[in-house]
Structure formats: C-alpha cells, structure tokens
Image 1 (cartoon, rainbow over the protein chains, first blue to last red):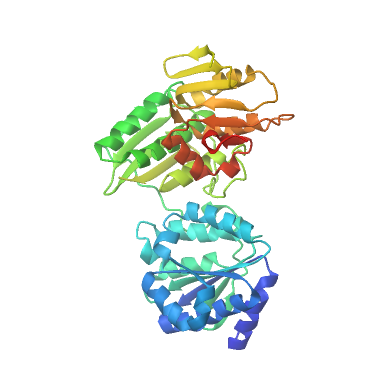
Image 2: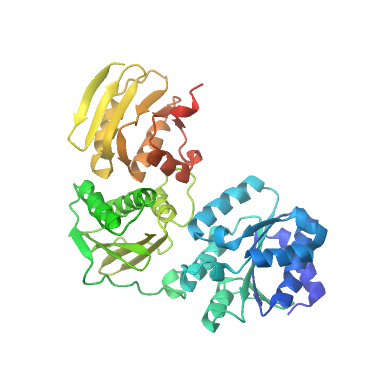
Length: 321
Length: 114
C-alpha cells in the first residue's frame, strides 16, 4: 500500500524500469482525475512523450483539468486508437522505437466502452500479452478501467493482467503477473462459436488456392462486402489455408457464414501444428521472418482466433460486412 | 522492351523482360506457384543492376510472395534492388499495411529510381 506521496515517487521512479504497466480501477471521474492528472504531470516533468486515449467527452475533462499543461499532451479518441489491437500494437512499437531513448507515457481508458465489437477476454488477452511483448519498451502506462461500469469479471481480468493495480491512491503490486506461461492456463480462452449447419463449406485441394479465393469472394459478395475489405480477407484466408497445408494434415475444411455484421471464415485441419494462441501478435522486423504471414493475417482481418487441440487446429476469421 | 515467355499455366504468367531486366508477373501469385517464381528469379541475369518486376497485371499477391521477394532481394552478395513497377492499388495497399520498411531490398517503381 502506497500513500499519495509514495505514488508521486513511484511515478518519478517509473522511468528506471523498462515497462511500467499499471491498471487504474477507478469508480468515478473524480477518482480517475486524482490519479491520472498527477501521472501526466509527472511524465511531462520527466520529459516523457505523453499521450492520452479516452472518449471525446473525457478528453475534454482532462484538458480542463490539465490547464496549460494540456498543450504538451497528445490527445486521441480511444474509439479510433484501439479499434484494432494488433494494428495498435504495431503502431505503438514503431512509435516507441522512433521516440527512443525518450520514454512514452500513456493514459488509456474507456476502451471497452468505445469498442463494443471487442470482447473483454480478447482485450485482456492483449493486456496480458503486452507484459512480455513490450517488456523492454521505455513505456509507462495507466490503463484505466471503470469499476462502477464494468462487471466484476472484467475488473478481475484487469487485475490479473497488470503487474500493478491502483485503486484511488493505493498502488498494489501483483508479482504473479508476468505474462509468461501458456495462455491456455490463463483466463479468457473462450470456446469458439461453432459453424452453423447452414454454413457454406468446401474441402481444400492443396494445389488450388484460386478456388478457395473464389469461394470466399462469392460468399463475401453475397453479403455485400466492399472490394477493399474483400481483398484484405482474400489475402488473409489464402495465408491461413497455406499454413494449414504446410503444417496441418488433410482434410482441410473451409467454412463460411454470415453473422449480424460480419463474415466468418473457419479453417480446420487435423494436424499437429499447435501454434501458440498469440502467434502473429508481435510485429516482425521484416517479411523474411517466419512469423510474418500470421502477423499479416491479424493486421488484415478484424478478429482472428486460433485454437489448437489434439485433433487439429482451427482458425476463425471475422471480418466486417 | 523484349519479352520472353517463361511460364503460363492459365493462373499465372511469367515473362522475362530485358530492358529493363527482370520479370513481368500476370494473374495470381500464391504458395502453389512460389517455386515457379523462385525459378524465374534465378534465371534473371545478375548484372548488379536493379531488377524490375512489372506487376501491372498481377491480380493477386499473397504474403508469402512478399516473404519470398524480400529473401531473394537480400540474398547474400546482392546489392541490387528489386523495383516493383505499376503496382495496382490493391497491392499498393497491402504493401503499405505491411510497411515498406519490412521489405528491405524492395522499392516502389513509382517513387522513381535514383
């Protein structure tokens, strides 16, 4: 437990560590500001590049609270900044590298409220992954979650994914949170939706990916997908099927169906590839790296889920119609 | 520009170009035809000059091809660049999403070759 002055010292010290990844579980705007404003000011004092991602309304509140300090801070709408976690991670890594050796300090909040398409388990898996993915980044974060608004399990996910949690001015370290270990033993690995009986399906001929693309294009056009997103989806599906051919075992089955606002594409093989659930999250340095293809799939598609089991691997792509 | 047909199977057509030296790729390129592309690249005369790929009539390119081209351009002893000419907007968008910085040795023909 750390008192207010201890918290100020903590923020000053954060620069000594590579990654300082903190969750703030606030109950109302007053509590949020009481932690976030000193956090921002400590960053400005230390010469950090400070960015704040909130909804428009909350950005306004922060600007008012910061007064003249606001002009040194970069503000962005969390609805845009976190629409796509993999793209956000890629952009952030590039930004942090470009800033080095200067530190980056981020206040991020209202992510889930701004992005209803994202599920909590997906979002917190991303938070958990950050502990290893950017552990060497010169970055201090205040990831803000509204404990009055979010259900208890989401608040618990926030605790489990951050090495330190703040409630008001109390900061508690969570030494068990390292982000290492198999993700299958961590929270949030929900079962995937099953393909409906009405799903279109085909068996993949490993020598013929042209037919795979025609199949998906027919489905996508049927449900009104525009050419740009369709092209992205075709590249993504081609890559996933190529992987299944390379690593998996026949039969490789491709299914597609529409949801409310998405097209689902499911690729199933019966091999023993066993990819990590997080494969393809970290941006590669170059296209000649082995993980490049799956990172490309995650960048191109809205939501990508990978599940491997004894009987084979299933990849589910979701892309907006 | 002299053109010499190297491969055509109805999905992918590869022709050799002489001036500028390189290849013309038409149709669709994916993993089923990576080995064909590798063979065609191997047949391009290694003069130390930039090699050009005319992609104006390439309707589809997969991520593995970008991997393949990058590996080829950065092969040991190679200083020459691989210039991608007449990129369609689809291929342009894909490469911009990936980032040109992740494709060392590859350059956009439209940006001009110094």
